Image (cartoon, rainbow, N blue to C red; front, side):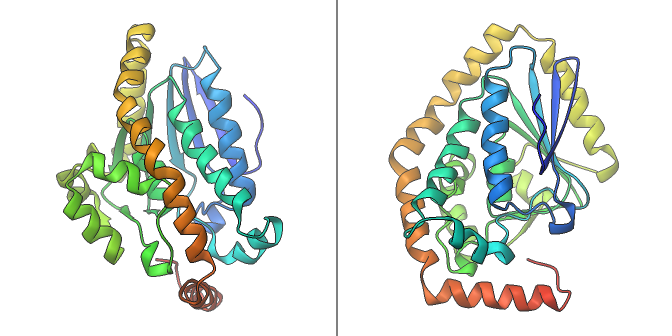
Length: 263
């Protein structure tokens, strides 16, 4: 497996664990991490030695979403209209969908925005009862175009998706499980062990049957992505230039400078 600046990897007996590794930023995704995630998932897809992938976060958080504090840097490195930025976002979503091997997310801490999308795009998701999950894009003045609007309606009722997307309310593990957003709610001390036990079990199953089954089931997600991913990302690009979003970023950066935790 390649080496990465923002990702830690560990493989044993066909189970590959990926840890988002920006704990000082609550594993928020900056431009470097975005590109490395695309490389990581693309590499996994072509590695026959890997049978199951676990994704989790290093430190207290799973992934706090896009790193708002680095938005100026993102704007500086991308072209007008941010087509490169959103091409990367589409590439990440499609790279995850291309993986033949089952993916299990161990949501060890808050999974927010893009972090929530990364969590529930896994085939199976375990969530710590100390964690929260939600998508506050709208509160930040943005359209949630990074995949959440594709996956969430496949997991729970559309009217509930609308309520949660419109308000940005964060869910605890028990409510997320009840709604169908995650598979299981488990105690923090049991999370990693329970996920690893399931991963090892799945790794022993007949691989051709397992991977073809996943491929058929993921066709539904691929069809949704075909007609809505680019549209959602285009609308997110539009909202990046709005005054609402700029005010939200300024407010976040001010709060972060005062020691407040991002929400």
